[in-house]
Image 1 (cartoon, rainbow, N blue to C red):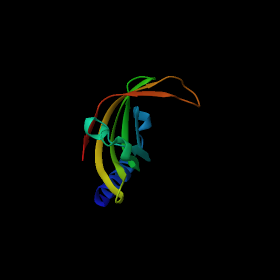
Image 2: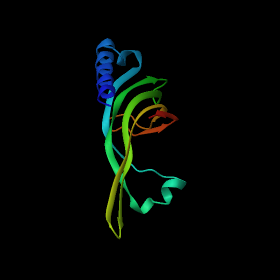
Image 3: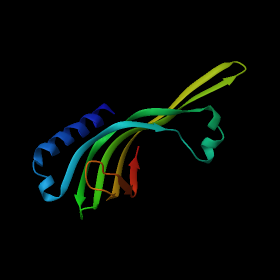
Image 4: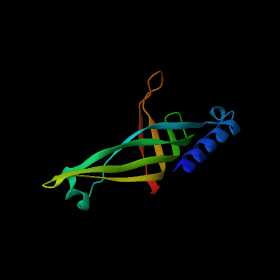
Length: 133
């Protein structure tokens, strides 16, 4: 996990140095980082949903966006994200705690639509994501 995070950080720095003039070519490149809150869902998780707690984790990576027009672009990203859940159940014998954590590499390919130009620019993103744990 630490090797993957370090590799993503090194790749981001190398790409930022290698592309000194991306804005002039209609290409945007950058680094994303933030938080992620996840909890498993689905038929199997519904049976124990009341015992699951959200997992708060890190998400970060790099992105590149290709401007197709003033208001439309295609953006692809490579993101490392932490997902999972905590489990806490109280029984007659005491409290049982457990963890279900996973680290993922996600690659979304997004269509990005800009609504306004100026200081504040809301965006609409839509597209598929490929993920691997």
